[in-house]
Length: 237
Image (cartoon, rainbow, N blue to C red):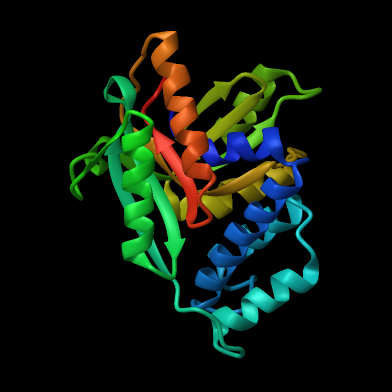
């Protein structure tokens, strides 16, 4: 999956499921609350704009979005949230970054360790895995009805550092500070953006046997079930 967010993959597969839909809205609410701390105007707060666009793409009600912004700005009261990033190894030595937003760091850490133990993973100390990844802008574009070569060319012309195909989805990688510029140039060129945001992209991928790949996928899905986990990244090819 390279730098692809495993939560994103699972989300698209399960979005019709009501329980998953509820968890997705809860995760998005937390992301909006955190982003709103840096300003409530999406025009000047790029992080907020990106997560609002993601929420709208998932058909999150406008009222939910507005309530989350008010909580993040301090206009209304809410639980004190903090961002967390856990590091781990999965089956066959796959490196994993687990990103989340929680109101109880100790509880979430315990939950993550329990899931890792149950699904063949291993929690590691901060810095053990993170160095294997780079922070980049990640734009996803569906290739439906588009000539792949033309889409890749448009991405490069817009300033992309690199591109990578995941079946019928093209991931376009940018420098973090150039994400919005590349996104706008693509949109101006008639490209429909499925999602855009900052993500962790592995410097190198590793290939594993099919049984280990399936074991990793079960681990990713188990992590996704936890309401505090917003994204899971790995170096799985």
